[in-house]
Amino acid sequence: QVQLVESGGGSVQAGGSLRLSCAASTSAESPRHMAWFRQNPGKQREGVAAVEGNGIGGDSTRYADSVKGRFIISRDDAKNTMYLQMNSLKAEDTAMYYCAAASSLWDWSRIALRPAAYKFWGQGTQVTVSS
Image: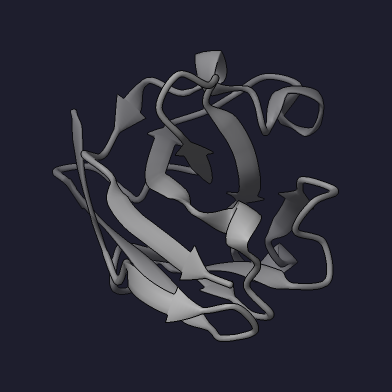
């Protein structure tokens, strides 16, 4: 079982930055696959960024086209924490942001940004960008 708690959301003006954190509580090792999703009322949850922990081999990452070059996902397994650095924020980035985790996913590269792939979810943190 994995419990996830997001933090770092808030209100910012367009062009600003925020860093989200997702702390994972687990009796086992950190989940290998973690991701950030976002959702607005009445809309489907969409994948933002995902990371596969590969230890000393280096982590693999995936990004939605809408955030490439602006957002950076990272993880610190020593702290059981995942981050999302969001730069050059736009009004359309406004949403509730959720972190998700899965112990192991087959063919992760293909399904990294699909909500159905992840078993564990946090409660979300709101990000509001004003133009």
